[in-house]
Amino acid sequence: MIRTAMIAATALAASLAASAPAFAADVVGLWATPGNGGQVEIARCGNSLCGKLVTSNHIKENPGLKDIKNKDESQRSRTLKNLQMLYDFSGGPTKWTGGKVYNPEDGGVYAGTIELVSNTELKLKGCVVAPLCKTQKWTRIR
Image (tube, rainbow, N blue to C red; front, side, top):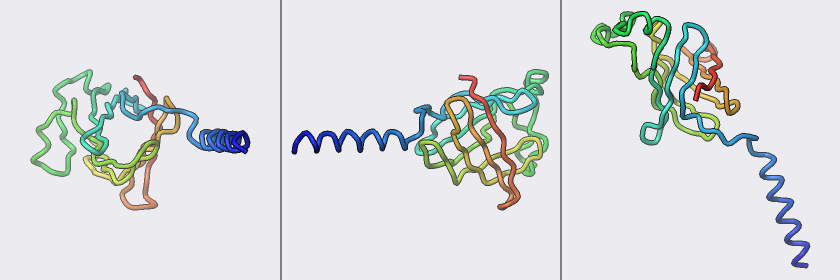
């Protein structure tokens, strides 16, 4: 009887492990964005995730490059280097929702989700309003 219970418990544990994601990566780290050589550092900010723009081809050419397309004129004098562009994402361990994505290319702020696809890839989705969304695949640098 005890042996049967142990076998059943082992089988249950194995089935639960098989239904979990096949990776145990954390989304925290440095990620390459598609195009423009962008790199974003994702970190924990209290109980949520946030991310800052570390560099891009434009920032490498001009480290003092300003946020000139920001819709808020009072923000246009801040530099793009280390600018927080992801904030207030909650959830995990593989999907975070309810966040905001700032796009310095157009100065817009969008509702966002982050989904960790694998140890080395995530999907960032930004929406003006569903279904008007754009999804990017980012690749882990470290």
